Image (tube, rainbow, N blue to C red):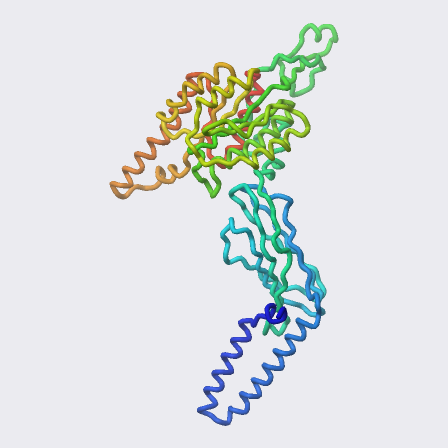
Length: 443
């Protein structure tokens, strides 16, 4: 029974069979061909039996394993590796059909490969998940054909393998070094201008080229008869909370990923930068109530705690309750902190409904509101209009884009910092803003 289930006739066999049928048709017209056609049938049967023996005499035939990461990174390309060892003494052709998780909705997955005799082959493909959770791989099916290519033998490996998808830890590694430098220009980001210093004095040291001339200590210079400068360091152990709005406004998709997942990915990376800068990082999420809370600390296990909490954020995209957010912050965050709020406002009316609560938070804390530019509107605005309807669409799109800028200006009036960003630039802009605040010492 296993033999029947694992044996598949290849297309080449059916092409030959179709040719034989054509020859039988011709034999009715030319009877002398009849015996020759039966000889071809005999040859085909012989080669078919030989092909079966070649593939099935070896018990193992091939060995294969699917190697996945311990966890997938949400929104990123994740490498999936398949290692195949050919134990046949002849070259083989393989067709790989991996039953990838249903979340990807890929129904035509296929990889074709030729492998030399007794050789080992590593094959890699990539998957980009767009939601957090558990992803189940099915069977790794490999169909093996000999050089005769009449039949294939199916081998099955690695059934029911589960891999969780976490917030983007690939970005976490990519931006890890950002924590040690305020100069991000090598990554295509503007260089942060140092406007001042924090008041935490570290030491007096001898001047070296590149030091800020404004920090020259003239008394020490006169005493040492050499240029001496005051050295300052960033204030440490300040509390930074990353608040994620998981309400209806964060449901909008961009490149397959919701704004909520962009915010979660950015929170993971920024938390790592905050901890590397010796500050305390904390997170919480809210919609109808505030939950998924991690209090701001800087102990060694904090990043793992944040990662697990972000992985478990779930939402029904209810309307967000900013009054509940204001009360919760007032009750639970007593020390002046930097609060970076990931949310989205589409209109001034939407902002004005929540503005009293944002102003209340900004009285006790340094508040940064991050909201998103609707990139799809750019396509409408830049598109050449040809009909009256397209003119109307363009005017409305420009109105919405203008309102986004008005929202940023309105927040600025009340001393609330803001970032209007595109989803793909969210992480870089958030890191930039945090480092700018650290550089200016305004917390």
